[in-house]
Image 1 (cartoon, protein in one colour):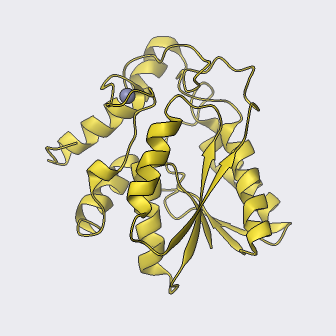
Image 2: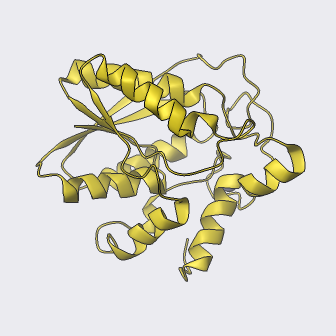
Image 3: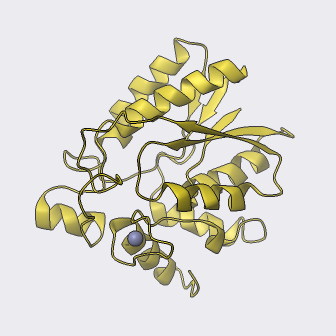
Length: 219
Ligand SMILES: [Zn+2]
């Protein structure tokens, strides 16, 4: 099995979920670098999250494929807007941390990595989110079904165990089911690329709001 990892909470919980639910003594994980501002922080946290686990980690550089984008997610892009994703949708009609085409490219790349590693199952941590235009349309059911068909045509099963869960439910799993296995502070959500979380980007805002709602004090 191959799982995509980003250093974030969702993929960290997914990794523990898979290791717990599936009878296997080893799993492959792939991290993608695609020009994102936070690439170094994300990879640092991937190393923290996978430390001590039976994981073979692969780092893949997708180069300058998004070189023409001005998405706030990218090092060459605009500044990130502040506020949660839903606040940004209300205020601007779009989320500028969205990188159009990202999941399409990265899931296809992950299918290729799975094929060349001889792995028949690819797991990704997509979850319920804002999928309207301007949001994360590449997390929609329609989109994931298309990628599932693409994977299946090549002999790979694409599984998305968290697809119907929202972010809060995933964080709750981390705090309850995997509290002994996963330290929240070992994960990284901020898109900004600073060495400390910016506390204003949509990823920070969402993470901090949910952790506060669930009574988690440290971040
Ligand atoms: Zn941030």
